[in-house]
Image 1 (cartoon, rainbow, N blue to C red):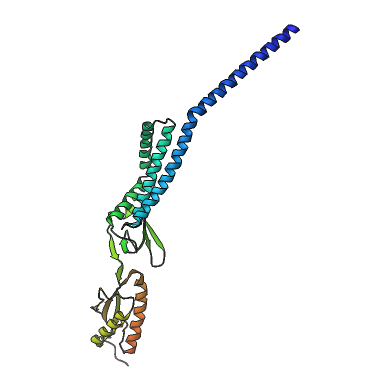
Image 2: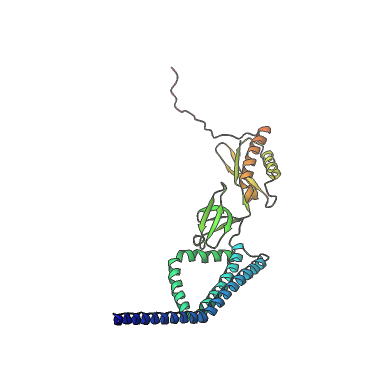
Length: 292
């Protein structure tokens, strides 16, 4: 009985010694790991904080300088963000290098992944390159009135991927930039020309009519003095002499000017006894039977 007790005590003691030895080895490994990698982690954290601060500071500094230059807003945004992302990328590379990550293999992996992403986002990238082409070639600018891809409107914004046109009813048409490059573009600029018409009777004094129309158009505050409005006879209709009235206005005054000129024409013509005839036809009966 005493012998078996001694054997058990010996085994327990042996197990305890082995456990203590393993704990000591684990503690030694943890200490060595902390000593070896603690400085790397600390250095990586410091590099990351400095990189974030520098990226933000340099990006803000560049943005402030670009705001003073004659550049389109999307270009300024692209340059400032590219610089920030570049600094952040270098910071991330330095942090990974601290942990012993092979940079050459990482760059190769990122390159292959970037190729796959580029193929997957081919449409998005084509919009991006088209947007850069529009911005740098300056085919049109914000606030100009254009006609393209079957749509017309005032250019509200030119982004890297899309162009937004503002419609007269305040709706917006968003066009992908790849649908703009290579298409026929009509740029009205900052002014538009109204295309108004009115008919007067054949027995009207044309000099008087022209003088009244000229006075109405030139006195309207929305009509531009230059270029000068075009007024003349467009055609000789069946029942009226048709006149064209084509004054120029700013893009924003286009609809309002038309709404003001037409009522004024009707009012002034009525005051001066000028008739605006409506279509009419005379019917002659031939071989009409005699009344009984």
